[in-house]
Length: 124
Figure 1: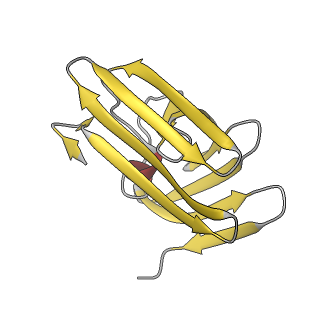
Figure 2 (figure 1 turned 135 degrees about the horizontal axis):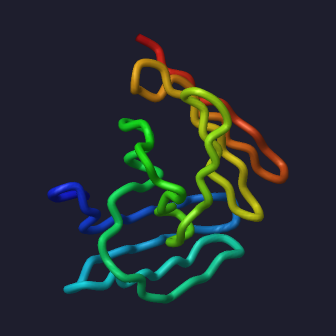
């Protein structure tokens, strides 16, 4: 949830054949409290506020001048690498996602994982 262009809180619930997992992010004063317990990924930490651009927001708004994007699933920042006009890669060691924008709106997202890849395309 965002308020005044800043992230207030986020919850990511994941259900897989390996179990049920969750990441919770909450803003408390000038810090975010992050508890990420996902499959093969555990993180409990705090980060300074504000977080103004995240992966969830990337589905609706083209990046502006950021060099990183906050990933709600891992509870940490991903590198954001401009590739060409309207094409950005969000990257960690384990993940490589390509977001393509057309007229300021997301047009296609390609998510690449170790054992699985998928494409999300906008349908008007």
